[in-house]
Length: 481
Image 1 (tube, rainbow, N blue to C red):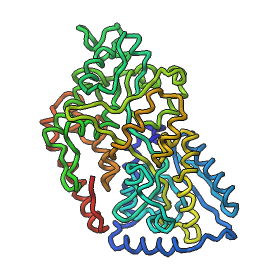
Image 2: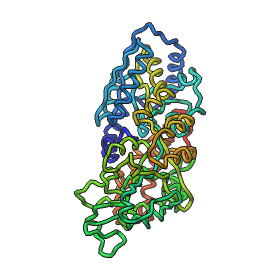
Image 3: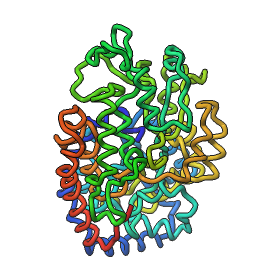
Image 4: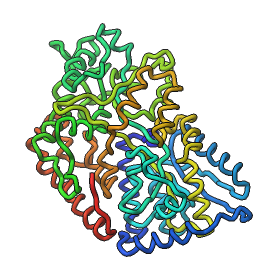
């Protein structure tokens, strides 16, 4: 999510490959440890809080400055409420995933750690995180109080491994100034992916002023794109589902990216860049940096977590209402809404005397007071709770079309990397056009068709799901979409 925007998704996947290799050093999959871990947590959850005991907690996270500001403010607020507790917040760099695993494996990990939503389940399955379910239940918390797509990915079967703090919905941003310049009407909620292609060809412009729809257009000399590759990166789930497909069966036992609907969706995603030149194709060399915040991309698919980021770029004129939002567009089978949240966890190895206080802080950041603070600093663009979300969204001035959030959020489902155990490995494969699979690179460069590559690619995904099923069986949990 937003705290990962300081590094590109492509860069994060490379960094994550190193971290993934460290999982074996933490522990084998939970297996019988699952029951032992739950019982250990139950004993700790029953312990009363001792406010006379001096407690020192170490807290790790990485992210943008907004995240660091929120984490420091939350730490200060918690310490004010509990003077016996000292929280030392230590911002981490780009090697965060690797460092976190290495330190947990060596018994020197932090007491509290922010865990991105694309690593939580794999870390949990390998025993790197404490089971927080007994604490959750002992404090009388109810799953029904939270947005499902915020809390659900933090659970794995009966085990809870984190609490959400930065929930956000996938949406489309558009720069009105670029539409105005080409005398094109703004997109609406009725737009389909076909409309995106039709209008997008008029919004991609080369150095000679020709549009992608004009004869003589030069795709190697583009100065403005209608969109960018984040449409595929953040939107694979939404696009595939809107075409009537799904990435896996409902029990996550079978990869389904070789079905006709999924093949059609992937071909469309590839054609957007390689055929229609609306988004950059992977092999198009350019010295320009194309991004919404650079003022040279008209439509950008991202999350609500970017509100505070885009407000900081004068070229976008955010405060003047120049940038607005829409839900992901409609496909042949309708619209699919996706939302996600990262969590805060208590790593394995936290000292018993620290564990319950660490939980108290994790609970605070994910509670109503903590979420108000997260919203203030632009971290929780959507809070964990429906009623609070409606209240706080109503207080912001921009974007003007903000009501789509509360209207469409109840439909939100999870992205694929929050549904599987092999979250980061799956993410590494499925991030077109920058994924680890050469099949997708050939597809998105227009060298092969989806019909030619998806059968082989689907087998790669199936191998991950087969391993996930083994891990789930060892843990005694059932996987589902």
